[in-house]
Length: 169
Ligand SMILES: Cc1cc2nc3c(=O)[nH]c(=O)nc-3n(C[C@H](O)[C@H](O)[C@H](O)COP(=O)(O)O)c2cc1C
Image 1: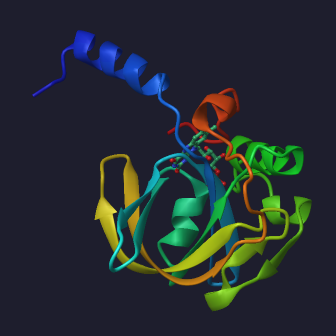
Image 2: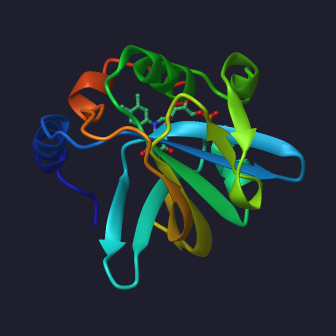
């Protein structure tokens, strides 16, 4: 059943006014790296620890993430260097740009690319992939984690929504 236009318009406004944290999710597989800015992410279980990261099917990241055993989830703060990385990973597409040539990173657990300037992050093993519509949900089992910056303020959707996505969703 088609959603009435009014429902779609009201929902679009309601979600546009929400605030929620931004993540940069990175992946590596078959010698290729990719990553994008993600707002659709959430913890889904406490015991066991589980986290869902949702990637648009159209993104370059999707093509790499579907072949990856692990994903790295970076918790982006509103500090200027990290905001710049949010712009790089949210505003450029790996179809046209090698984002990893434009930032400092190293290989982490399971080969996941870890961004040096976003030190709060974890690596999660992909347990399942869910069809969620135009996004795919990657259910992650955390296998490694770093917390270098305590008490930083997260970069929220309201501060990031002016970034023009590198890929239409
Ligand atoms: C505020 C904001 C939130 C976003 N949230 C998501 C998201 O949850 N999932 C996703 O796949 N892309 C999301 N994007 C879009 C991608 O980050 C963007 O299109 C990126 O350029 C894709 O890069 P890629 O083609 O290299 O994967 C978001 C972008 C912005 C600006």
